Length: 171
Image (cartoon, rainbow, N blue to C red; front, side, top):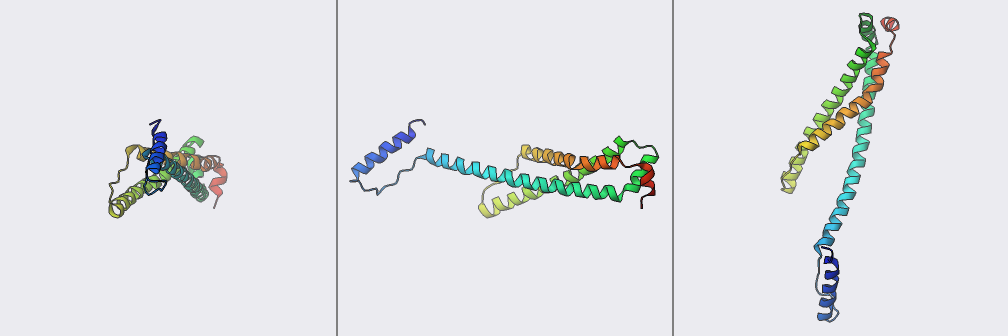
């Protein structure tokens, strides 16, 4: 493998000499093709990571906005729960679990849609088999849960800080 490129250059020089300096032949070195493929794959991986990161940030902002509006709409409910004995921790966990469930459902829908589209595109259009690895599924679910926790922690803390007396008078 170390001398493959040098051997290709020597063979090209020899063939060129045998053909009178006219390059009416083609010499392909598989290692060069492999290196080009690896460079293209790296670029595609970086592009995929960038697009995925943007989608995760947008999804997290969406979850946070939904949870903030939920806290506002349910202020009276929070006040009642706190008045009958719920601690700030109870309220925090309630809203945090809701945010995680919201992101988990979105992650499951995304995994199902991605697996379906990969199968349809790969098998139907390209004629190649498509597989979805378990590691990818669990990784996607882990990232989805993490986004839910990060996006839900602020609204959960805000809900826990609601004063029960003020919340009971809230309309």
